[in-house]
Structure formats: structure tokens, C-alpha cells
Image (tube, rainbow, N blue to C red; front, side, top):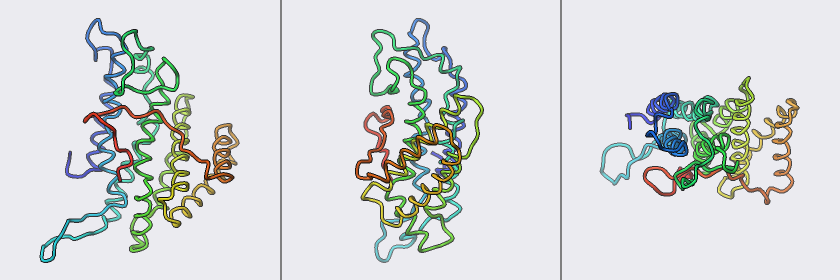
Amino acid sequence: NGENASEELINVLAIREQAIDNFSVDNIKKGEPYSVLEDVFVPIYFFHRYQTEAAVKSIGGLDYNYAVKGSEGIVVETLSFEEQQKALETVLKTLEVRTLLIPVTQLKLFPPRAMGYPRTRESFKSNTGVSFDALGVTATASEMTLRLLLHPERANRLIQQKALDDDNLGLEEVLNELIKMTFYSDYDSNYEIEVMQTIQYVTLQNMLNLLATTKSIPQVKSIVNKSIDDLGKDLKANKDDFSKQLLREISEFRKSPEKFKVYKSPTIPDGSPIGSFQCLNN
């Protein structure tokens, strides 16, 4: 697992990238249907899921022991700015287009499922019927990271730790870095742009969720509201169709926040160990 969760996530992402680049028809036996390739690809694509969960815990994280009176060592300490900032930078790499985009070469290996090989709980889910849903996979992976990063309790802790130590990481810095990375990068191909917009939509949805949930303290909501207001100004200046859609989402939330429901990205497949992945683990 490595000595440091953030550094190990970098290693895991590098292994994942190499495995995706090397993925080919040779990952199945001769005579097996291509449908099997899709399921073999699942643990490779989500190879970073558990290490992301480990690294994100450093953001708003604590170093503590279940100490008793008379024992030595740390009782409880907030992690340093340097450690939290490193964790944030690394976790944000899991939301980069280059990380979540499945290369076209590999996409060509995933035809509609063959007869007798239906999708299972360990398969990718799809919003495109029988065809492989490349953008849905992107939404699933970005949702996985964002539910962890923008967990209400983590946001609340970031407010508290910033209040106690102004030099430490705060929620405003987290949101600024997140928005900068997801909304202010340029891409050339239509495929890259669609992947980027998928990530942007899931990002906005999880920010709105921080406003809608009763678990967020008022200070969290004030900072999230400001971040969304600032983002909205830039979206208005963009004038492209997708920016207009995001503005509609924000406007509808402002009018009726009680009706807000997070858009459900395709569910992440069960992994090892088999069972429900607790993506809200904080």
C-alpha cells in the first residue's frame, strides 16, 4: 500500500495507465467473445478506486490515537498543510480528462454484449442500451472521486481546521483547485470535450449536493454558494450550449432547492471484496 497514501496513488495511476495502454484482444483466450474483454477491463479502469479513497482521507484529515490518560504519543492532530495539499493535487489527477478517457483503440474492443454474456453487477453499467457507454464510465469514475472529496463531513472539517489554523487547507482552496482543474482546461477533439463536460456536470452536481444536504453546516454552504456564483459568471461568458445547460441547472436549483436530486451516474461495478462500495466513506 505504500508508506504514503498520496504517493501510492500516483504509483497506482501510473500502473493503471500502463495497463490500459497495453490492453488488447490478447487479454482473453482464443475463442472467447469480445464481451468478456469488457468485464476484464473493469478492474483495470477502476484500479485506482481504493487508493483514491485512502488518499482523500488526508484532506481535512486527522492523525489520532484512541489514547488513554498516561499514554504517550499523539492524541489528535490536524494533518499539515503540505500533506493535505499533496493529497488534493493527487486526488484531482483522478478527475483529469487524460485519466478518465478510454483510448479509442480500446473502445473498439467493446461491441454490444454477445448472447449468453449479459452484464452483471461486476460489469460496467450503460446509459446507451446494448452499446458500451464511454461517457457513462467517465461519469461513474468522476462520481466516485467527487463523492469522497466533497463529502459534507469532510467539508465541515475543512471549515473547522481553517478556523483553528489559517495557514492550513480550507474548503475554499479545495473548491478553487477543483473548479480550476475541471472547468478551465482546453481540449481539441470532440471526444475529449465530451469527457470534460461529463466531469464538469458531475462536479457541479456534487457541489449542489453540498448545498442541498442537511449535513452541511452554514459556513460550508456560504463558500459553496460563492464558488457556484463565481463559476456562473464565467459560464455566462462562455456562451456555448453546454455552459447554458449548466446555468439552467444552477437556476433550477436556486428556484427550488428542495426538489434537487443528484443525477445518478451509472453505478460503479462491485469490486474486490464483492459488495457495496461505500463511496461516502469519509
